[in-house]
Length: 354
Length: 236
Image (tube, rainbow over all chains, first blue to last red; front, side, top):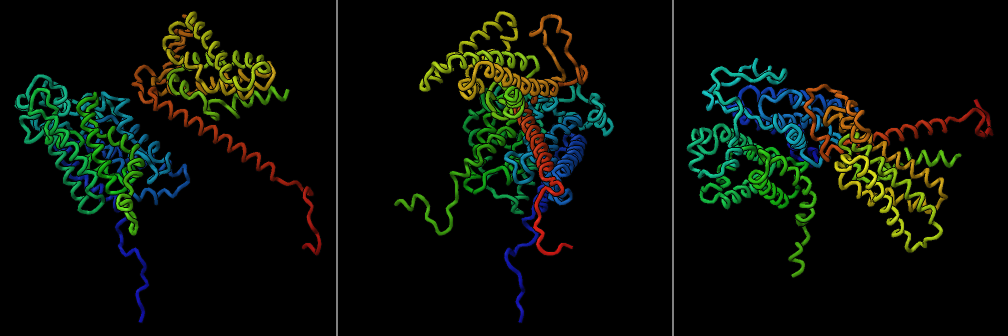
């Protein structure tokens, strides 16, 4: 009788880089739908342009490095980077901004270091930060979410005119105070003198919302849903995202100050505004640039949560996710060094002493 | 003659203080935001380097090994102070822009390095030439980085040159990308300096590797009859 000659590993399919990357892309779909619903076709234009530039730069560099182009493009890592940067940029970003961002993401942050698996920093966040410190004006102009604009969104032709020709974005029936408006985070930071309750009732961005800012809350909930799908698919473990959200929530609760005028926002507000959920489930879970062990990931996530809160509350930048992630990417090898898991068969340090 | 050639080649390319020895990176990265800054600091460094090399070479037999480094530092500090006063007198605005980086020339390891490695072992004239060539080598790298960063960061070349060359230089500014160029702030900020310096080093290594390959290829070409071949037995 013959036995099947199959050796370990016995799992199939899973673990291929391409499959993991594809499921990340699928998981962004709820977020894409939410963003498109509130901010219009600009989001989709961002994604398409970022993908084109990303794949183009990746193929170009692979050609220059004399690597197998189709093999490396098929791991979809460039596409994931493009999607992450495309989602992080404000809708209706000029095309050249996306090109510069993707150049820094793919060419400088990823391929110059040796390609997928060798990049010490999260490529999408490098691109984002380069753009943020170089072009602060373009990078902080989010249009007013559709419900506050009478459900009005820019038409496709207006959007294309803005992206490619730099025309002003004009919408029929748009409110008089321009098409861009402050994000909830900016409103909260600039608030000095109003109680949180007053701020919430005075400002339509809060008063028409369920939890924390029209549009933004649903975008964050959608990314949360995508993140839960990824955890269910075991693309990453719960450690980093949960500890990041916990750290952010605890700090927010401490500094909430009972909703006084110097309050820095409630935990719910911090969880559901800005790029919190996007960062927690799609950025800090990057297996290459994060800490490796489970214990290390808890430390890694918690420190990112602390930094996000600090940067959001006390700096001049609109959100802190990108800076926090990059700083902790620096620290990831250091965290790994101090959180080595016990090897099976060896005693832990404290036990061996006693 | 061959020594002159060797010193020149060392300073400008083979042993370039900025690209190979990686000395004096602090001013290299900090003040190369524009061509005029780079040129100002490059000239100041070159002046100090020539002066200190000559002085160190002159006293090389009078100073014992034990106290040579403090003596060299004193000499460099004296020349730096002279340069600083000169700049204060003639290019006051540039002096204010460069600020702390002019006194910091004292701590530029390239200068102390040349004093110890070359000037303290050689006669005056070669030492002066070495100072000049090392200074020139440092300056061209400063200028290259400054030009690239100014071009990408602000879209101009030779902006503000009147700080160094007087009023007639005011219209030297070139708007390479036109008036509407928005500027790319990263290039002017410190990360841009690191990126550009790293790329320059990579390009230099690329040239060297290519030159080496060419040389090797020439060497391995054996001429007919250059090698003795054992011819025992029959050759088909």
